[in-house]
Image (cartoon, rainbow, N blue to C red; front, side, top):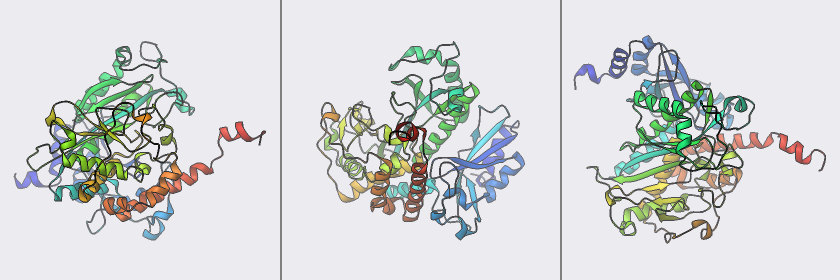
Length: 457
């Protein structure tokens, strides 16, 4: 490596040289709620951003989903809303191919003035857990699956969820699964998503039409760098939303936009490798793999206290009910989608677990951090998993996970694992934001309140 290529700004210079038509760069971080916030830069500013970072107020990491300050985080008045240098994450600068104006984008991560990581930044929480695993000789390999709905833009503007008309004029309205006709109907949009993923360097692979009308999933191939896997998920969601808008639709990663249709999940596929990249979960008989069993046991043991991360909003809890492909209690099995932890079949060398709890609305950084933390908890304490489920898990698993948002927040607040693994300060900030938003949500008087109670109470 030459001295020139090792400079932080060399990546920026190389990117701009390869894309001389770029007019602007979207530079953003992801807050605790999973919302991207940042600035648009001009090309002349990019190299400076790589050298010195771009200042963003510390309060940007204290906001709820709607952008309202959460004073209880201690990131507002106590800090004088001072700036934090936000540095571009190496390897994440890429194109924004849905933009009409030639645009690039880059992920930022926040630091303190002394150069230490900002403890409120979700990306640093994930890095903390990954680092703890690495110190023990374990290197996670991760793939993220995200389901989403396409919605009619006019209906969405009126806060209604309705499947959109495809370019050929047909509007899907049936409960189907793996329907090839739906993939054909939305091919113009999907073709642009795949082309955009290629332009962005995203490993978009298998495409699936899910169980409900206009519900889709594109599988992202696994990464040996879990940080990059989470970055991929953020960039993928931006791509899907941007391309949907370009085609006159809305793409929603809301957990349950339709009362009568299935919810959308984020499934995390995880294995642990050694320093040589050898899969430590590999083997013909999963139950004889002590590391895999301890990892599963840790996930079972910590599932309830992590639900506020896996299901971060009031709407998230509408997914969880029997026979919905969303879990009701901790359990595991081999190749069984009625349980929250599925050990995959297939060639023994590819053995890994699929964590099927998160909604598509979960923050990928925080959700993956909680999953890896649960695995680490099981490994460190030599935990033993439950007996694997055979058959229909919904008939055998006692419902024990929090069923509603306030209950999940109480369980998370009582956790000792989350602050120990994700960081005490981050966990407190995350939960303070979610608790405040929960209070604000339930303080609203909805149309349903009036319909049910205005005259009859």
